[in-house]
Length: 200
Ligand SMILES: [Zn+2]
Image 1 (cartoon, rainbow, N blue to C red):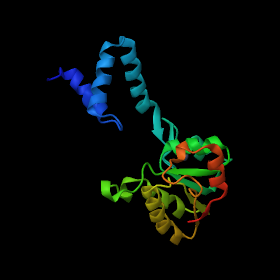
Image 2: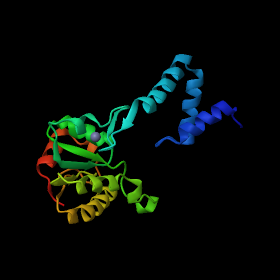
Image 3: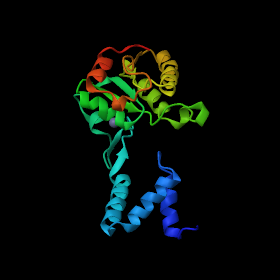
Image 4: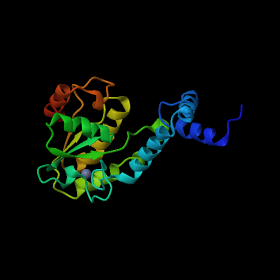
């Protein structure tokens, strides 16, 4: 069956989202078709606001409110600029911030190295991280990529890049469940991982 174009367009757009196959995409599209107009409008507004209202911090690449020159954490004098915690995603920053145990700053890679999927160093914010370290004033880089194969591989690559710059490189993920995501770890485990970080 050929769907009318407006439905097909929505199905295609939804099917591009992670975890949503063509079947779920069709179900969602038909749900929205039947739902009150307000439901679609709220969704459309939220999607528009997401891009219009949010930007990435040009220093650490965490999410921030659009229009700011740097995020709240980078701008805070209370946060130690000598300690940088490297994470995969903005959600990891939120998880670590919830612990109230980390006083340094962050660097968000926006993914992990994955040679199989063709994701190389230039696809992540690695050059910017090396630039921050090179600029001086950093004494420790703590690698908090997830304890997964890609996370460990990324951490090993970063260690190789950063260690020659003469700063301490530590790994945070020890003690976290292997294969587990930082963002799902409980606060006690995260605090332990933060304080128990070891040389990478
Ligand atoms: Zn920032």
